[in-house]
Length: 373
Image 1 (tube, rainbow, N blue to C red):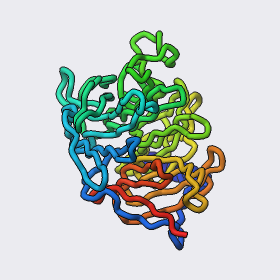
Image 2: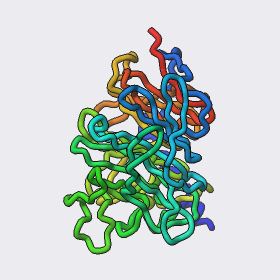
Image 3: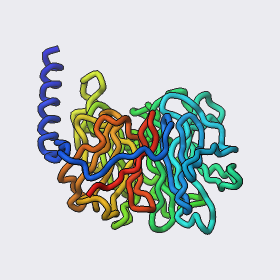
Image 4: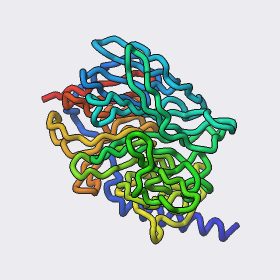
């Protein structure tokens, strides 16, 4: 017992030292906001993802399994969506347009699916087209297996790179000691496909016997933010840690991000998961949060409509119910700012085609941030 107590104390000291080294850990609240949050789309329960159509109308996923089209101030329900597995964190998740949507009409979305022989569900990626307020040409591009009745860690976000590959994330589905470190199993991974679902020939585990060849990186816990960096073209993710240790990572081909062998977090009960925060051959995050903010959604600001925001990251906090702005110096976070404090659980954030920031808040709707001079 004495040895256990000493171990826990040493681990806590090490973790606190690591947090001290993460000097950007302190979050500041600005005295005056440079925007006004205006409710743009009201009466949404869990708006998991949203994307703008070329006519500036919005497609919105409600976790319960509704796909909503918001146009000219009115909401309509899109028909013929796939059957969605409803359990815990599972439901209808992210949505993105193909980069050449105006030419090909493809819409991509992730959702929890019960398809398969086992009970329960797992994350799937589908693409479809929109016609007369209904989905058509539905194509299931990827379905993770095996199903499980566990309700946590489905992921999932979608992003396209500059070459037109589609990336999507799937959480480790609560099997932390099995899935994330095993490239022969789904879960705890970032995947990369051609836009039609084919496996790219240069994916890192093509040719590895038994491997899931759609995998691009592994060792992830529950990534709920995924974007293409507009300047470098890199894919960035944010992901939930346990108690502490939420992360922002730059996704590299074939890289191992360590979960659960390395982490800056601990178990929810306060006991250590591991005494290691880094290990040879495993990637370090460019930023981590202690305590956890439960990050969901992420946007890189390219707009100059807000004073000093250009070039920063915006991340939603589910746990503390605010929008966080992270000031970057290259790939390093040098300052944090708390925005929209207490408004609600921020699920998704996007920069719209008008250069304004839109923020999806659970139980409220989608807010438009109006600059205030």
